[in-house]
Amino acid sequence: MVGSPRLAPATDTLRRTALFERHQAAGARLVPFAGWEMPVQYEGIRSEHLSVRTGAGVFDVSHMGQIETSGPDAEGFLQHLLSNDVTKIAPAGAQYSVLCRPDGGVLDDLFTYRLTDRFLTVTNAAGHERDMAWFTEHAEGYDVTLRDCAADYAMLALQGPGARTVLHQLTEAGEPPARMRVAAARVAGVDCMVCGTGYTGEDGVELLTRPEGAPQIWDALVAEGVSPVGLGARDTLRLEVCFHLYGNDLSEDRNPIEAGLGWACKPDTGFVGAEALRGLDPPERLAPFVFTGDGIPRPGNPVLLDGAPGGVVTSGTLSPSLGIGVGMAYVAKDVAAAPGTPITVDVRGKLRDAEIRAKPLYKKEED
Amino acid sequence: MADESYPEDLKYHPEHDWARIEGQEATFGITWYAQDTLGEVVFFDPPAVGTTVTKDQSYAEVESVKAVSDVFAPLSGEITAVNETLSDSPDRINQDAYGEGWMVRVALSDPSEVEDLLDVGAYRELLANDN
Image 1 (cartoon, rainbow over the protein chains, first blue to last red):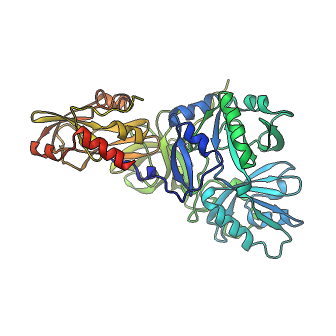
Image 2: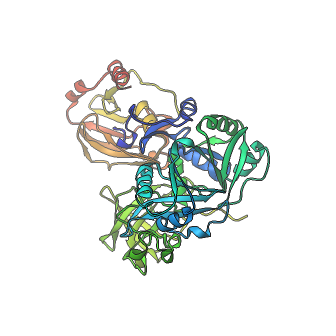
Image 3: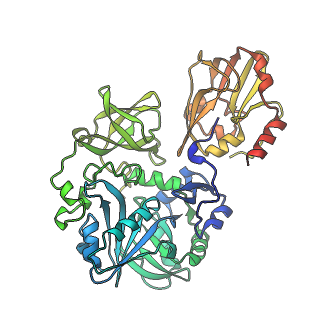
């Protein structure tokens, strides 16, 4: 047996977050991820996943980057770069958008927060430096100040149906912010920006704080019974609710329309890429699917439609909540639009039966 | 998961597979180290009885939530039995790698290949050098 190359040993060139020692002490399996040495799992992906679906889990997502935009033209500048309508971000609000090339190819997907005197944009670790360069290149003619502030923040995601209760116990004043809102708060004695956002499909928050304060918050959360959760479960959680992962489901070779992110693109704002996307009706769309029999889909697996090449899997795993193989694939538009359509996935030579589904693949039971 | 162990009576392949040799037949599985590296096994794709396996070549796949790994044959031969219970309970590979987590039973085509395998001391040394 050989370990997967994805479990390759870490090298000393990798960066470590402020919580690295906490991960080691918790018995995490640490792996290289976008230049960082990050915990992929602690107890096990399945149990961590379920702890977020049923209780509360905490993720170290300090590898994610931040770019601060301030100055008189800050809003106009971001409107020029980001696909969504930045003017619609309420005070202390948040918004999802993508960063496009002029031809519509996706450079990254981002969350932007409107703070009192500036905007804060959260980037993916792998794209951060490129995003920063892209922002800087396009700043000419705008009266803005851009700051790469990735090193200023540690970032923790506290997610799950129990997340707010735990947060409330550790917060000195005020209610946790509503979804897509941000508020300043002191959590476990540490000043934070508390954001009502996440990547799991559960209620919860993301906490931005100075790196030195992060271990204190982590310890307090764990003492309250919150489970440490690694990047492995972060991936299965987001895939069950069909959130995109840049590098898998989004890339420079795909535009946001085919990725199903047309809702986050407002061409009338004139953002970079808007003209390429206006009225675009790409032949393929990203669609969720489930396996109806054995097997686990993996990125890169070919999709067959009636025996002929019909697309490619971009994300795939075993869903811990559903107990079956699930994934997302780019397939013909009419197939993507017809949940229930049978497809076949070629998993390393074995043909596996699957079925197109609607988003999300996992839905909380209504009670 | 079970505690780390490497039974004395097994022979080991450097790709972290074990063989329990009984005359002209052998049982194969993966070692404690292999299952620990992989994490929780959620899927075992067994080969068919009657399939020929070749030393150092993949004969099956095990998958964790995160990753796929090939399982290599420590010896050559023909599969006479597969552990069907692993289809429903692949976690047995984690719980009992040398017992209920066995994978296949093989009629050996060249028992002299056993000489190439490692005894427990040599395998433990290999693990120590790898880490």
